[in-house]
Length: 154
Image (cartoon, rainbow, N blue to C red; front, top):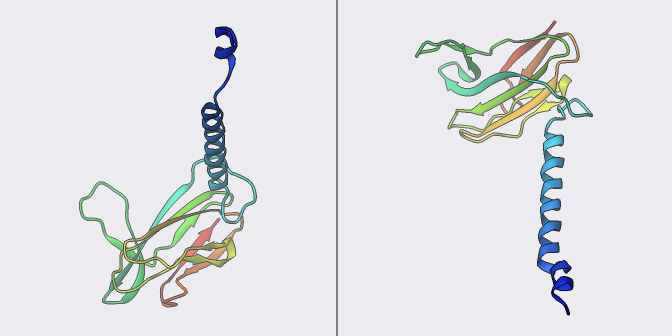
């Protein structure tokens, strides 16, 4: 066989490497596109979501949802059962973190198909949805029904 014919031949290893790269790229692309689909949507949504950070705590009031006010202060006041305010059509990502080492907790807004898994101590989850209805809606923990708050969409 001449040198010219040998240089054109692609080895089996090279073909496997190319196929592997294509499969990995396709899987990553598919996962990325699916991650842009809100839990109450059917198609990917491009845009920046409003980040809403909620934590769970055990206080002298019992189990609660909490949030901290934003700002540059080193000590931030904690808000118990914070009211979440959104505009209709807004994309929102709820970032829930269980900071309670006593029990598992979850976060649910039934009208928007927002349902977290049961989160263990210091376990986070982010859930993105579209605020496509106006009104006042209830969020809650199914494990501890006393943990609740309100979502207002205008």
